[in-house]
Image (cartoon, rainbow, N blue to C red; front, side, top):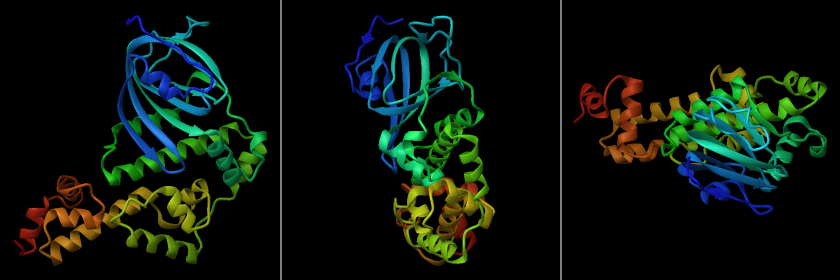
Length: 300
């Protein structure tokens, strides 16, 4: 284990403490609602957190078997387990690697706003409790899902956004009293015709942009992300991410068939990161590369 201690003064963010330690930031992504997603790798050391000022959801992807709180050396982590570190928490860690994990950071304000929009409840009545080495299949699936995504691909970033918003909804519902949780879950239904048209029109008008986030689409329906995602699936029979991915692929197919635009221009018009990303999605969806598809359609 590396002999490296990362101490913290009060109100120092978790990601700053990790950044001063032996931990390596492998990739990072800013999400809507001021969320921040970071994948870390650590070989070992000492971490002290003191009232970081933001909430942290941590899920182990690999390792963790010898990582523990200083006070409880007999309780260690494992792949798939999660830790919830509230904004006001304090903890001292002994980390033994190799360890890989994802962190999702959100502010206290973002947590309070989600409670209001999701449960129509007083934020102070629902607190995020500290949890160390918890087991939760939903959170484990979230971590594996985002870890498998390409964080540079706009199509995949929407999927990451949808998965992360759902993970936070899960935390809110888990923290809520049964009565509030049941009321939120009972209120689900399909989108109204007007809301559905607004959302679908917005998707088609912004396929070439980075504005297709779950909060932005939910705003078109005047719903919280939680209710919107579930109502959309009820109405359309698929997830928001699946619908947007299908619309992007359909636009790419049309442009490949009806125009001679360079592949880079087709990719930009469909919201793909570049011609290689376009090729990957077209081959997966249509069974042929863009060039092969054009030749099949009689274009060169």
